[in-house]
Image 1 (cartoon, one colour):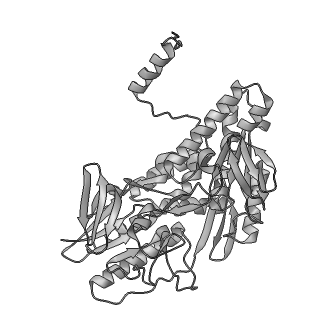
Image 2 (tube, helix red, strand yellow):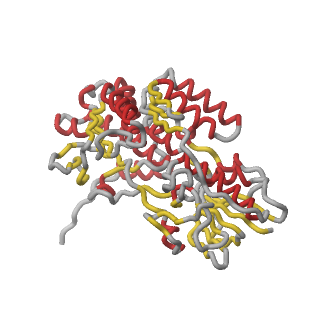
Image 3 (spheres, one colour):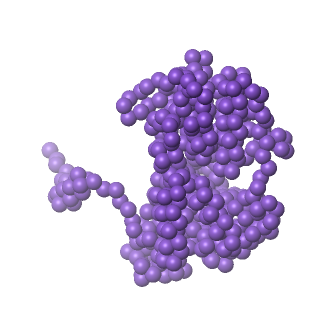
Length: 435
């Protein structure tokens, strides 16, 4: 059997899986390799952070999408384009897989070296683990405020700064301010004025990807709900006690969330492929330049869009469309037919800004408020695999619309860890012996 391999289980990788599974000619098998057993709906991570949805509602198991393909949960560490082999680390050890065609769809990583101190004192929002960590951090900050008497310390603990006014930053700030407003009643010793959210945007307005009208609508909505929106404001460095701005102003804050910057996957550098701005350079049909049998789509690829002649942006909408084109071109190649150049015109862009509000531009028609938020959720619900999962999430989302945010601080502590903590607490303090 000749193998068609896909590396990556994100939007692009799972769309490739759906397009190719069961459609390959006789003699071929489909293999998907991903270091996670699920795909993450990254645009919904801010809702998981704000407890508007549960973590399991923003992920979809890859195995539920498979009909006849083979799935290996592992991390690809090396690719040999000459021998057409890939090496991956799995639960059963290191193994090599031979392929006839390889489709790279492994996306990118969060970048925390854009500002001094960001890696040490900033919080990323790129994975489900990031969202849960930030959520727990928010709950710990609010709980600690009840125990502190110093007004300055209480104010710093209650101040949350979000860096970046794009989609992720706006959605994070909106969800965060709603979450704080919803949980405050469970912390009676925390005054409402102590909990604050500030959004820093190094641009004249929010959401530059959208029209000025929708960017202003998002600004107005966030400001009306208590977010201090500071456009045209650049952060210079991040410290333990807050953020220093380019103007020299210091903003005290105990929690800084970064939603800007990405870096390429380390595999790109190890493969020695032609790259530009950290993304793999591909031909018009999504095949990698000068490397037979290799294709790249999604955030890891620099894809020329024949519609406007510009590189396609690294968004989920384009990743899904690129995957469909790549799958069609791969099938055409296997059948001896010519391939087509990638061409796509944006149908619309959407963003949820919390409190059942959103902004959207669909086919040139601007929407804001509840209608845009419902459209946003409907789109991502449609991307979920299987009818049963769609139905369960729809019921849970509907239920969550009428009840407040969850204030559970989840600590995944094992029994052995509890015993260790107990022994440390009951043991006498260590003494310094002399002589």
